[in-house]
Image (cartoon, rainbow over all chains, first blue to last red):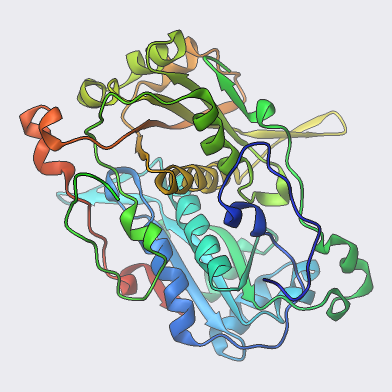
Length: 196
Length: 196
């Protein structure tokens, strides 16, 4: 259990606790993450399903203090960087957007969807090991692509900040009220029987 | 545990068993799925994270024998329909591609990625409850969109067949060798430290 308990989410139908307990706070302790621990999170992502098993998801990562972490942090929007650069690790989630068969390259329509599945696996494995995983869309994709030498046939999706949950007062004051887990629209808004 | 054991996958780094044990076979028993059970799977998807909590993932579902199931099954590629129409449930995974704020509509760049995260949650909740969840990209998207009255600002990603794992000999002979869990490329192929 987290040291800093937050109001519990309530599901309308009984689901495994990890889906409710996983959330996306911003306050990190200074606990570092070992490379072996990060590889375990990426390993969970590796086993996510993908269309025709093309495995388009790609990850570039850095640990706090290393050069890669710095390059990723520098691409973050200022409002994200202020808290995310205190994370133990930063992971860029991308995907390869083309497949090659018999020397012919073609667009892979499912790359973003499949990268999302891999990200969810990473997030849940992180949660199960006691880490926060907070994904951000707010970063400069052009800057990140250049700094990380991303190939042209790839697309960036998110930067994930990973670390140990800390107390809200580690954050600038304006961020503290946002440490509460977010809610969801009703299931009937997103799932329908028979037709949209 | 499954009644029909398959060769075990081996991970390079220690991860929760669900990530390895979840896979995508095609042989279903005739066990039906109750609406309440399906709603539980969708509930897990509901709690997946999304950019700015926009929650773009959408689901349309049918239970075997109902009209919605039939409409979804009819859109499947013949090579998928032959096994997937024996599923207990079919779920179309889609996403809403636009957001509206202050009366202005704009494209949501993260809709497919976030729908993928929701799909992964559904797949894992299904696995934890003893169901197979096999996602397919092979279906007629135009036909499905029309038959299910999909709004224009939505995009289709996958059809998921859900059911109880059956013996391989329930399948046409040509499909039986494919009941083995798929492998993955090395982690070093998809995840790099510091840069692509």
